[in-house]
Image 1 (cartoon, chains in turn cyan, red):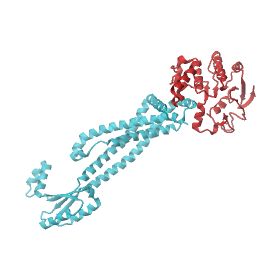
Image 2 (cartoon, each protein chain N blue to C red):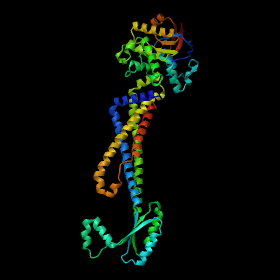
Image 3 (cartoon, chains in turn cyan, purple):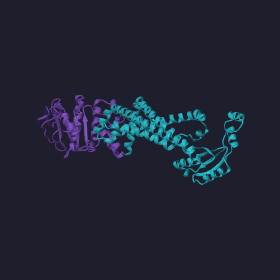
Length: 296
Length: 210
């Protein structure tokens, strides 16, 4: 296609979009709604993935100790921990340290702790893991081994709930893909209908162009460009709405959820945002092609 | 052939020589427009062949068919101009969009419009023109690619007698330059005025050649 032909396609497409502006707005809003749903799910999964990744890097074991743990048992436990390749460091938290942390993190409940005759919080060892060597299945076995060691009351392993969170993220992602795909198919059909209406409105012109010997590509081109422009506009509307929703949720919701998640939260990366626009344009392009099939 | 055994054209065998001016005549429904539609490859014959310059039109691919149409000028009774385009665009749109050298194309378009006395109406829209002017724009569009063949279907059907004579004179001049012209009309007075070969069709068959 020559530059003249491309210019012609864009000129005709823009003129047609303007002529049919009411139905075009509805079509753009349909695409925007579909992409908003898809983008919303993407935003949620991207943030869940970010959180999982961030927290995975900081994943740790908490090994809670019996009050009556003997020094020999402590030594044996430390030896066991130091010998494991996934362990990068360990920190002993005494019962007094645990109480101090509790008072710092939950000041409203600190008074209740003071009323007790003895400190109920157990001593523990916080074990930092090396993410590069932290294989989930092997660590599960290590956690069971620690639990059976003498003087150990309980072992809490962050990775288990992180894996659950990752599973939730995966579920949300698949739901988003399926729902998004259904809505995008509906959008393709909407664009095709609107473009077909545009074709009907300029049927005489297309027929005359055909008699003048205009190549098929030149006859179909404006219809496809029309679809692409509708799809692109729908995607941009969806992105703006998604960003507005993200800003509102971040200011009202994430503050309540907590600073840990807030730190991990962010909008869609630029690459995914661009991909969303490309998907919108692709949807429009498919709708345009579907309508353009009628020009032969 | 239409469905259920109805023939638009039947047993038609005719040859038009290069550079000839031929009238197709006959009553309404005789098959004149169908013959022109076959020559413009808007229709394909259910049986038999239509050849132009030795090429079987039925064997052209869609893109070859479009290239063929660019080499054929057509003029219709209802002008078939694009209302949203200026005279200049109606005449030169397809060659311009297809990337014909801009200056060369503009010069050719202007020459044709000047020859047809439309140079002062270049930027007008079809609906701002009289019937005669619109038909001259349609002729300009047919001529701009310097076609070897011009097909005209009742080109004077919407025009008064004086304008009809003017348009026929234009076709005669075009033919004098070597272009083959095929005009479908049932206006016998015009045919007598131009005085060229006439093929008479009736009920889809050639009934007279004069």
